[in-house]
Amino acid sequence: MNELKRGDELKLEILDAAFEGTSVARYEGMVVFVENAVPGDIVIAKLKKIKKNYCEAKVVKIEHPSKLRVEPRCKYYGICGGCKWQNVDYKAQISFKQQQVKDIFERIGGFSNLNIMPIISADDIFYYRGKMEYSFAGQKWLETPPLKDEIDAAAEDVKENPVFLGLHVPQRYDKVLDLDECHLQSPVSNKILNFTRTFAHRNNLPVYSTERNSGYLRFLVIRESKRTGETMANLVTFEDKPDIMKQYAAELKENVAQVTTIVNTINTKKAQIAFGETEKIYLGSGCIKEVLGRHKFSVSASSFFQTNTAQAEKLYGVVREFGEFQSGDVVFDLYSGTGSIAIFISDAVKEVVGIESVESAIRDAEKNAEENGISNCRFLLGDLKDRLTVDREWMSSHEKPDAMIIDPPRNGMHPKVVDEIMNIAPKKIVYVSCNPATQARDVKLLCAEKYELKKNQSVDMFPHTYHIENVTLLHLK
Ligand SMILES: C[S@@+](CC[C@H](N)C(=O)[O-])C[C@H]1O[C@@H](n2cnc3c(N)ncnc32)[C@H](O)[C@@H]1O
Image 1: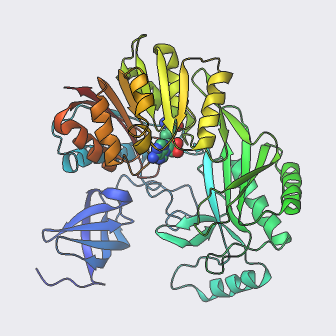
Image 2: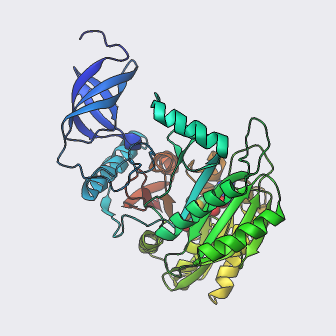
Image 3: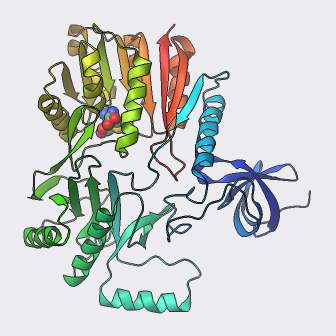
């Protein structure tokens, strides 16, 4: 093989989908991960990185398009990066995801002969999200090399009032793509987005800058219930400016009547996250109500809640089915959020104990149980790595769980939590995850001695993205 160099252009036949929305091809035996390609394409791709065992490339020309390609609905497709597979037929997206879960469990978990059930796909593939987090930026993002007109237009914008509001460009947390529509949440959400940008312009509100550690606007978080229509706008700011917020709340409500609650989260720290130390409510209750199955849930500004309501119902259905719960069972729901899984399964068991580290989520969970007339769920605040170990008194005085449901964040479980689960040794574990890679790692540890992996089922909560939710069932050996 001739020596490959960065910038070389190769003709490639795209063989399969790979991780994080890329695809894979082979060039003279070498694996090439290709951006912006679809399996079945024949493309010319430019090499970006050359490693010992593989290369990375980006499509510069499609010579022959794949039959799996469809026209993306979004005008920002290809720039925004949020919906990498929007140019692929939904059925094909689903089969890529199914294959990826299988590959991950084989490669990271070392499992072969997996009992993988068919993935549960989504009925609604647009406007499915319950939450969107938009970022403010003081500078418009331009593709490099920018067109001269674009530079002039952006310079003009910056001079007048440098407020841009949208989504981050992939892997660039300092670059924001100014959007006026997104097909993931709803037309109402788009109205809130556009009103908020106009309001900021009109009132000359400065964007927060981490470099200067000053400014005001940081994020706009929109939550919307798909079942009740209740809608929250949460402006995350660096400072507390009650007069501005009062004016924003009044004008937003007047312009977008569907908004039911308006919150101001104040984050005075440097870390660019849409959470803060203080939450002030300027309209409504500070919560929205969502419905899952027979139950209603209050969701406040900082609590985790599943982002796709229709699919969350199907996901929780899988948890219930895998759990095969008995009326005498005590179940621990680890990483319980607002208590939605605990409440969803509560009528099938004797007791559910939810454990969660965010205080407001615990409050929401307790309120949710009460409002649904449920008395066999209790929720404990704490970091799981300490809650299961340090608080031995509580653990030893409480009945041992028959089953555990585990639903950690993307980075999976702390090794101490895995160890402690093995000490407690419930008969069944239902492990829910939005990141099959960390799940496979944790399941491998659990199965090294004590558990057996019985079943695996994925639910597509995030159409057009490469993300997938996966549920595994483990039995004590
Ligand atoms: C993926 S969410 C699952 C929530 C819930 N099971 C549901 O379906 O809505 C993960 C939850 O774990 C919580 N969490 C993250 N790290 C934690 C830790 N170390 N200890 C306890 N809870 C944690 C987060 O606040 C979040 O509510």
